Image (tube, rainbow, N blue to C red; front, side, top):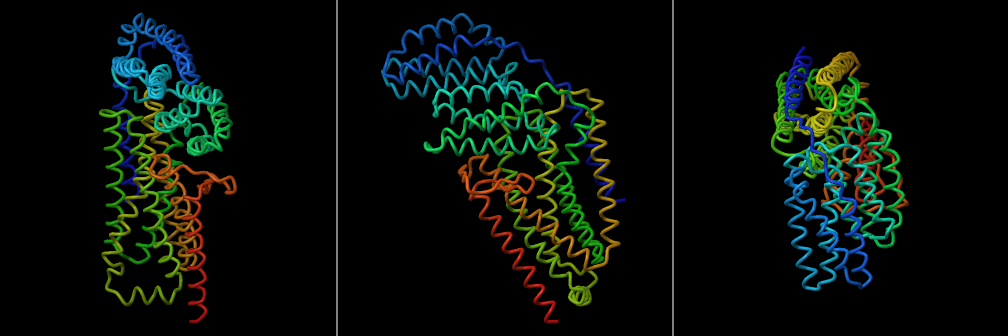
Length: 480
């Protein structure tokens, strides 16, 4: 009952938060056609790269700006201010005759125009809900730069695509988990390829693959089950962690441990909802993108290390004699306070990691489908999680001691392996770790195995530790 009440309360709070976002949804004003301006800037940059004068093309661009400045300002004050700043910088660099700096300034100006064209600016502030169609336009701009071998611009555009991904990932994951995972991986790989002059050419097929896979999703309509699948998909792994911890606490007959675990879980839910409100009312989803990658990255790595310890502890206590000794040698509170705090911390991190994704994904869907369908979808998704959690706890208690500990330890080891890979991948998305890629490494999305030594080496280390723990405990059991 406590499990159902906790999940039910979380669901109610999330429903209220999601529905409160609908009044904020504002129809963006129609953007100005920037194709002539982009054409002028492309010619000006090309001329400078070939040692020629860019005066004619840049003058043509400035005429376009004078004719459209007022309209752009009405469409988006934020875009107008940024364009004015970029134009001032580019004009000054061209006047000083600094060719290299002029190319950089014009490229920055072109990027701002492309962002405006893509719909990244809306109303009087930067839009928090970029459409998937506009994101595909951004991909097309990056593809054009790669096709023209303008690798510097392409690298900048891919960095921007990584930041903007959070604005559209909810659209993608609600329709196809495989396309979502593959696209996120491609963003990291493109960044790595563009950072290495010898591998530049490998980036173009990846951006083409993303465009091809995302286009069919751009015109799709959302339904109730699209919203329902998000909490189910994102919450299942956190549920496995919490279920294993709660079942263990029940087998140890430790009520304080249950309180600590639920406290960590509840605190994580509140933090996720607070972030959701912050993003909805104060920040844009895109502005929060890098912070979300950092949270996912560090929480994944920390949770992985904690799961490694919990997995070892569960596997160790699979021996019935050792378990009985553990229970009888302690007071009625068989689990130490330090261990209960670690359980609470693990529950907090696991729920924070998955809950943050869930809230951000649902924010991305708010305003893009009827409020009733969104609310029904969230309710259905959490309803399924309640049923799964209830069955998990019941079956966990009914299982004999040794099978329970063995199954739980392998589930925890699996999550440890997966969290480590996905956590490091998120840190690469955030730019904390280099986006290096090796063609000799495998790529298995379901296990969060990515073709990078930065994620592969820690995962191999985890795997070797798993094997060592299993062999060690088998030897210990055989000696008894």
